[in-house]
Length: 207
Image 1 (tube, rainbow, N blue to C red):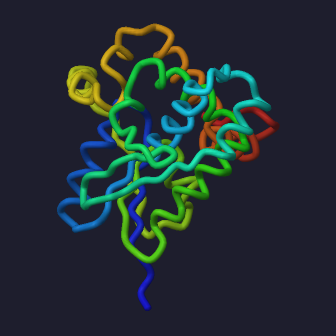
Image 2: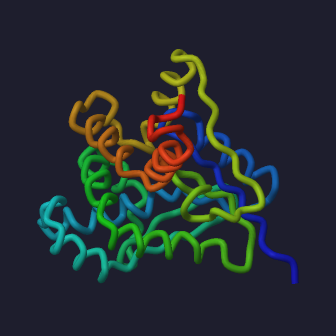
């Protein structure tokens, strides 16, 4: 029995991952999944229960008991939290900030990475998000890191993707700051930094 085709679209925010992933999924007839939606759903659950996103123990307990599901229909997907469709609710600026905070917890990442992997069981999938090709599916047959583009193109993509990041998040300094902090906790980035130190002569960072 052939293995399912898993295409990982990895890269930083604003690189055009969503656009590329959706078009690729549609062209190949595969399911499309935005991995970041799982973290947003977890953050929404935390906020709905009035838990502070930086309360490590409380957040871990809330997410552990959250029922998060992704329903895919070709290049479209819907997000469900405890049986309710929250695909629109998770795109708010408030959820954006909270998602950046809860995604730093190892217990949260472990649960949601396991969930993301099940979405590729028995079928093909195009999944986009940070660390998809390095952590979630390190052995994916194909991995496509997002390519850098001119500032004008990145700005246009950001304006066109407000539904992915929340209508106010581009203007919200807290949301931008939270996303920048979350990047520093990326396992993929940390692994690359450690490798750079190992490869550098006399312990000096390679250039």
